[in-house]
Image (cartoon, rainbow, N blue to C red):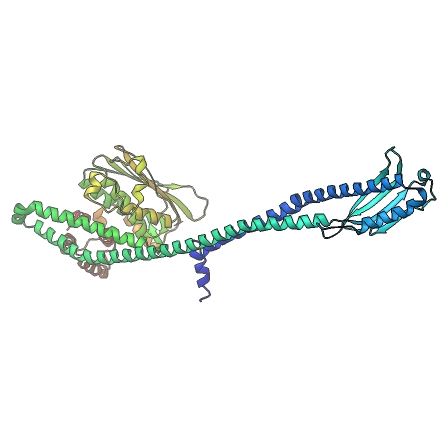
Length: 530
């Protein structure tokens, strides 16, 4: 086993990690149970047993002292010493079967000889182990029926009864508690087995899901090529007036269906990439103004085609350059903007970017927001829109869409350190927003400065060095055919020329995001330029 394999298998969420947590919980429960039993025995049950044994010892001592008093009262003085000695010896040799030994371990007698009218010390006894350390030491007065105090008897009663009783009770307590321990261990083993099987099933499901995702990605790659051919031919058919006169409805239907299917395939491809275990980001320095203006142009074209009012609200305090994965951020914003245009039959779409305060130096916190006056979303359906392949039931979603765009955007924003929020009211509109903490530069690099100067007026296309009209028409033709390979080859030729960087930067987002119809519309804006 590699020295790195064990830490990887113990990472949070792994089978060994979960089993370790469960084992730790059960071990802690067993330890707490054992501690509570021992604590109950030492501080509650054992002291009570000791008090019960001490009470019994007092009763036994009192019975023995009563016998001594009776002997003192009814014996003749000359016989008293012999009878007391015999009585004491009898007390010391009597055994209790319950404890398996003598219950009186020692006896000391001290008398008041003035009352007994005997020679001092003649009846004092010190027999047995009167200083027994583990015995109950009980001192009792020897009082006659008339109330005379004849002396003191110190009796050492064995603690054998306490030891026997405590051993039996302790054994029974822990034996009966052993059933609880056994049940806990059985539940522990069953849970370990269940979690092992659940994790095995989970891994099988994940492997199956990944296999299906890879399969879908491979299939969509294979489907996109013939679809591009279908779309290309529909564009060519549209240029034939005679053909369109007889088959316009069918050709338009093929074009819409193929275009819709191509968008779904692109969404599935992006979903399969975003659903991988690790998504790689490639942050680079981005001219924010130029980046936003490109998004504005792409969205404005779609909004104009749909008859919508597209508004832009950008903060004057926005940084000149930020460091971010340009492709991922463009993908997120284009998805939100496209949805806003798609789900707004009439009215307006507002795209705003503001700068918020942050405590990090050389960083800026940007607030991106896309709002529309479209059909809106019910409050109880706001969570459903982020579920992959989940679509709300309305005429627009029934006609187009794969239900993956928001799921992909939400995941990408989360991986970039933000969170996608939404608020919406049916028939009023929706608002999507998120915030990102990004590195920014006060003094952008020369290349970024050059792009910023070009982007000061996004609609001033005449300031861009355009390729010849023939090459622009060829780009438009290949875009109408949806021929990605031909478009990329033409772009490489323009890149080798070395003087059309601004133009290529202008059309690059349309090509990379497969927005061919918008690319044709964009190239159409250059037609009046010689």
